[in-house]
Image 1: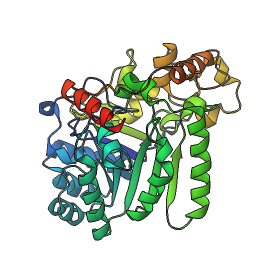
Image 2 (image 1 turned 120 degrees about the vertical axis):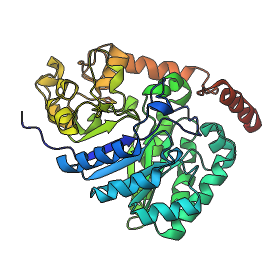
Image 3 (image 1 turned 180 degrees about the vertical axis):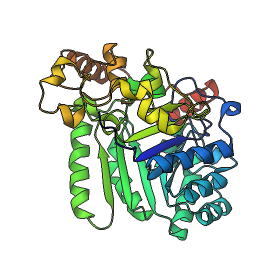
Length: 373
Ligand code: FES
C-alpha cells in the first residue's frame, strides 16, 4: 500500500489540567507528570515530524499551559517549520505568557468554551472562576491579534445556548467557531447519558449553524461536528486510520487516534525507542486498520467504503466489542440497534449529575447545579 506522509500531529504535552470537563476524551487513567517527555525530547519529535511531512502541530493536553516550558516548546516547533496551534482552556495564559508565545512564533490559538455564562461554564468545566478568566484571556488574545478559534464542545446541557455561543464568538473576535458535539471516548463515556443531546437539539443545531454560516460569511467560519449517534453514516475518524494524522501522548507513545489505547490487541511504540518515521510507516498499530483491505464484509460491498473507511475503530470496539467491525453508527451495520438503544435509553434517563475526575470536583458540580436549579 502507498502510505502518504502525515499532515498533522497532535502533541498531548501533559494530561495535567485545571478543568475537569465531564466530556474529556482523554483516558480514564491519566499519565503522571513525571512520565512526560522533557523539552529536548519534544523538540526532537517536532523536528522528526517536520522531516516526515507534518505541516500542522497542535499543542494540546490536558492543559498545555500547565507545562512550564510551553514557550520553549512553541519556539522549537516554529524552528522546525511547523504551523503551531495551541489548544487551551486559557487557564494559565497570563498576558506576559501570551506575549512570550507570540514572540516565539505561535500561529494560532484554539480556546475552549464550556458555556456562555459563568454558572453554566464553571459547572461544566468543574472549575469555579474559570469562565471569567477565560474571558480575560480571550480579550488579551484579541488585543494581540493572534488568530483565534473558539472551540465549543456541545451537548445536552449547552446546545440550547448555541445562538448565544455564535454571538460570543463574533464578539470575542474569533475567526472560526468549532461547534463540536461531544464524542464519547475516554472519560466522556462515563457521562454518556448526561451528555447525550436529544434529537430535537441536534436538528435545531443543524438549522442554526446553517443559518449562521450564511449570515456570517466572511466574518466567522464554522466547523460543525454533529453528534454521530443521530447520523445515518459514521464519520471517517481521523480521516481514515493512519492516513493523515498522528497523536503523541505525554510520555511519548505514538497513537493513530487519541482513543487507540482502548484497543487491547494493539501495541503502541514510543518516540524514546523508535523514530516517528519508522512508527508511522512500519508500526503494527498504524498498519492494523490502514486503507480498506481489512474492512468487514458490510463495508467491502458499500459505495461509501472510501468515504468513511468503516467509521471509528474505537467506537466499534466500545459498542460492539470488535475494533474491526463496522462502526454501529452506520445504518447498514448489523449492530446499529445498539446505537438506537443507547439514544432511547439516554432520552428516558435522568441526566443531570455529571461524574467528574476527583471527588472534590464532583461536590463542586452538585453545588453549582443546585445553584442553577
Ligand atoms: Fe480511535 Fe476513532 S477515536 S478510530
